[in-house]
Length: 194
View (tube, one colour):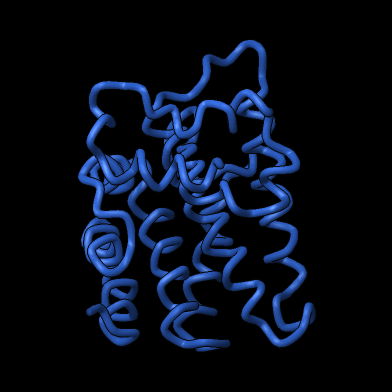
């Protein structure tokens, strides 16, 4: 079991790939496909912090300094286009993980003031950027792994379900590809998209 202190140490030393692996192994999706996607160089920092924030919200049952630190670090990683991750397109999977982490953290706060205006804005901007990216005509649909991570992380979040294109939710995790056939990620995505 991963503790708050272990999470804090990994955040402090920037061990984001290790953070992804450890948090996923502790009560998260046991998918090797998800681990590989989220631990990539273009996604590891935001994905590691987003998963850590989700786990901290479960461990602390309310506000804690390490969770606040993770949320603040995530705000600094948000790109100008609203997404998270490195590269021309950002990372859909990392952005989904960050959004879920910030969403979970926001609902653990005792008041909207405690959540902070910056966090609420970051959530809104990231959600809008993600939906825009998913619905842009010129862009190809994200690959099946990104769709599966996206649905696993945000498929139960009402704001995402309301804004997401129905065709995306109907994909049920984009889980028809051979590499996801027997993968836990497929099961999690299908459940969240239902």
